[in-house]
Length: 456
Ligand code: NAD
Image (cartoon, rainbow, N blue to C red; front, side, top):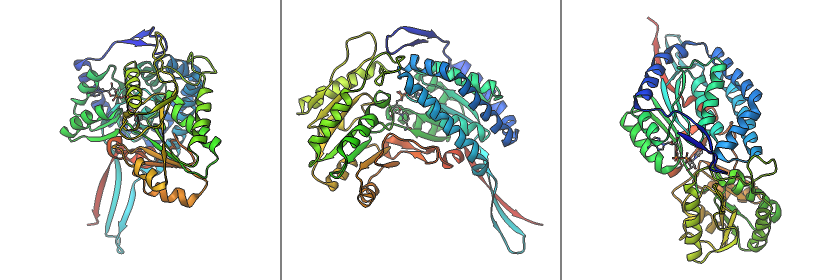
């Protein structure tokens, strides 16, 4: 399998792809190794993850460069991702013992009857991952899964394979056995072959279209399934905001990681009273973003990781234009060897247009005028997705009222495009099922076992 640099289309590396036989062998090795790993005391498993944290710090610059080369992410944003991973590891290190400890939930007065819950590892899990934040979306799964005593068959996205191999090497250097964390290399075919193994859990991050297939395959096998899928994340800007601050925050939320975050701002609704002033400030921000070589320290907009996405964006712009939208900046593919799209701002958009309904996953945003809060809430909820949604207003009561009517896994007040290890990460509707992060995202890699105990 060839690994291409999205900024230039040059071949960065070639790697051997897994086939059906090697995947079956990897599954069998993991199945045999898992009970031995689960028998290792929790403190020892945590020690290995502590060493892994140290390896990431030691390898920081090499890892950041590899990530930038294979996904086109600006180098500073690659470093940020690695830095953010350390915070997540710290959370898992400090919270896992509490989340996984045995609980006594009942004892009768005479001490004859007791009820307890233990958190047993699921067994062997498949972790099929995305490329846009491979350290985050992968780490949210394989780190707590390993801590909880599971073996992990990890399929990095075919667009983030080298990063996946770095992760495996660092885990082995940290004391995780080679049969307990096993990378599976390849694209859709390898993913489908992995799902034919009798794994105990399937943890998938990716698009709704693939998630549907993965969910069906896992359901057939009665494996536990979690799907972290896409979004069409909206933000509403009220009439009482500081326009410049809101515009700067939202331009970053929409264009960071070149718009390729599951929680990138994808739709903005602005109160009609401040619409024009907001749009002016927003476009000025976007025009200030530097697009260029992802390895350059000053680059903010990088290359798009997947080449086919260029066409998706081009079609969204054409569809919006045809239906009456105006392009204020950008709007086209950049003619070059790599996968480049101009940072694009559209106004006069509405919900007949694909750009306001379908995930864009790129440097493009639609800004729509609304008359009041009720109309904004109606538009926010007019979607099949439900990952995140936000509101900008200095008024906490107004924000609370709006956000409590919103149907999504996370809600934001005066912030956006934000993930915290302390809070559950989940989606509604086509954004998926299940939870990562927070203590829910540790226990999700276990099966609660009920103990009914009566003294003889
Ligand atoms: P994708 O669906 O194309 O691929 C995801 C993974 O599935 C890859 O590893 C791929 O090789 C594999 N795959 C593809 N076909 C398969 C099949 N038939 N069976 C098994 N595996 C298969 O998604 P992507 O392009 O890698 O990621 C982008 C998508 O991920 C976006 O929609 C984004 O919103 C979403 N995402 C969601 C979250 C979240 O937390 N909710 C986080 C990151 C990304």
